[in-house]
Amino acid sequence: MKKSFSLWFVVIPDLALLFFSLYFAIILRYPEGLTESYWQSHFQVFGYLFLVWMLVFFMHGLFDANSFRRFSGLVLKLSVAMMVNLLISIIYFYFQPDLILTPRRFLLITVGVSFVFLLLWHLIIKYILKNRLVEGLYLFSFDNELKDLEKEIESHKFLGFKVLGHLNLNNLDSQRLDYNAGVVLPDNLHSHPEILQKFYTLRKNGAAFYNYRNFYENLLRRVYLNEINELWFLENINYQEKRFYNFIKRLLDIFFGFVGSALFLLSFPIVALLTKLTSPGSILFVQERVGKHGKIFKVYKYRTMRAGTKTDTWTSVNDSRVTSFGKFLRKSRIDEWPQFFNLLIGNMSLVGPRPEQPNIVEDLRKQIPFYDERHLVKPGITGWAQINNIYAGSEEETRLKLQYDLYYIKHRGLLFDLEIILKTVYYIFTWQGR
Image (cartoon, rainbow, N blue to C red; front, side, top):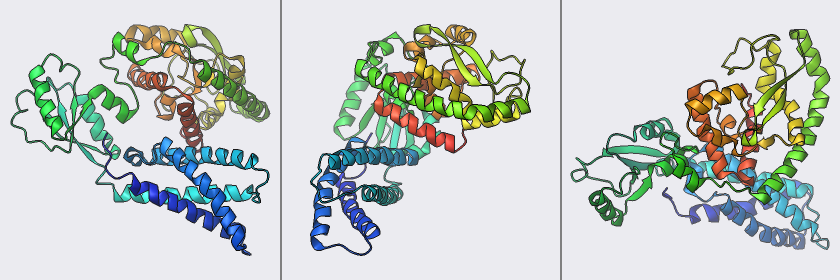
């Protein structure tokens, strides 16, 4: 995907804003004033740190034009980058015991002020470059096989793409193209060398070309499931265990397991009382689910449905089986808190595809090709599909959910897990549970 502006258009103002934020933070923290030597010491010490901060910004893609396409993505990337910068700064000052600076609250003020100024500036850039960030696209197809992709582009205009036209065997020679636009191509061009030659000529004139599968995945952050095959899994999925990643992930699961279990124990008396007052039946709900490599395990939740109702089917929007208090538990995600014990046991992880019931999995295996591939990793309390508001309430929704699950399995890593955790917190506070 093309970059629509110079890197320095963001880098230089960001660095200047960091120093301005430091100046502003000094005024807030020390309103009585400082000596000249103290001023210089602050700017010198933080000057070194700011160079590292800029590197962190670069690593998080904040200087990439694509980061300005999504508001949520921009805020998230900047938030994660500033958290990393705060951690680096704490470590830096910890190993500098002879420094005359004792940052503590001042460091937090500096990070907070910097975040506010940088966010405002990046939002201004997003507004200024709104039209420049729109990239035109041509879709080449033999039999209109990219119609699904066009629908997605049209329904996600905020991502900055616009379909300029359709190319095919009949109009390729006559169509006048904008060489600054991109061309999305299907997979089956290898059998048409004459078309490849024409596109190769266009490439020399500056046109950009994208494979439609990769474009779809980069655009929507989910895999293109319609024509997925065994070769895709061989080329894109790492079937070997990621030992270091799994080790760190397990440590995080244990940590969150203890913290979450404490929350569960503290909440239990109140939730138990309100559950009993609003509906008869047990407090906790235990159900079998399918875990990693298809192993069956028991998942624990607060009961949110009326006792005696059939619970081995999908949950729908405004499900009549859900009690009044159960709706609150689901919206707030408190019903999931007992699952922190599953983290300690080890049959679930904090982040991963949500586990399904064995009978539903058995049916979906027959209906959806490669559905079992989502069991390559541990199921999670939260997941990539959940924070994209995708819930399995039907076969169609399950297919869409699988696209997100496979995307997670392909790209799983500590930073991706952190993104999902941060977004989960956001969705909890914005009351987007179901």
